Length: 198
Image 1 (cartoon, rainbow, N blue to C red):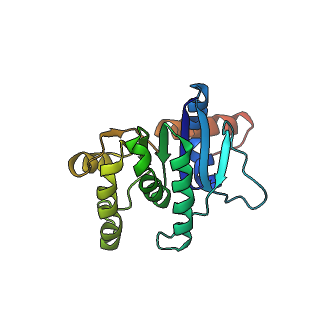
Image 2 (image 1 turned 135 degrees about the vertical axis):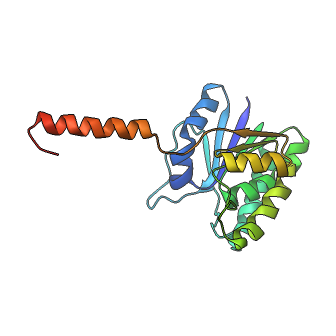
Image 3 (image 1 turned 135 degrees about the horizontal axis):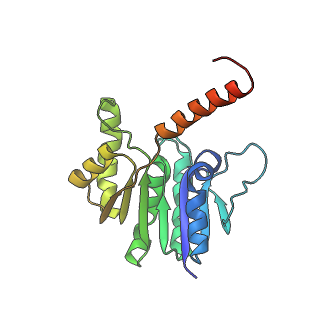
C-alpha cells in the first residue's frame, strides 16, 4: 500500500483547517495516511478524519527553539523508517524540518511536496524576513520535488529564483466577492420579508 505523510507545525490550527480534503483524497486513492504535527488541542488527542496514524511531533513555531532539534530527530526517524511515497510539507518550521529530514528518502524515490501558504518574504515585508526566510527557501528548493504556491507573487518568484523540479500555482486563500454580494442581497431580502428596514 502506498503511504503519504502530512507534516505541519500544528494539528488544530493547520492540518484541520487546510488539509482534511487532501488527506481524504489520498485515502480514497488507497494511500495509508499519516500526519506528523504538534497536538495543539487543549484536551486529548486530535481526531483527524481519514488519518490512519497520527504522530505527535513537538514542533515549536519559533525556528530557533531547541525543541525543534528533537522534532527534527523524531521526524527523520519516522521518514527514514516509514517507506513513504509522498512527504507533503507545510508551515515554515514543519516544511524546513520535513524537507531536511526527507533527504535520504528522496534518494529512494520518495517525492517531497511543499505547499507554501504564502512566503514570509514578499514585496513590502521587512528586510529581516527577507534575510531569514528567502535564503532558506531558495536552498531547500533544491530538495523539493513539487513546490505549490497559492499566490501570483510567490509563483513568479519561485519560477525565476527557485529550483524545485515542479513549481505550481493553485489559487488559494482569498475572498469570494460574489459570495459576499450574495449575502448582502440575501440579508436585504430576509430583512424585508420580516418587516425590518435596512
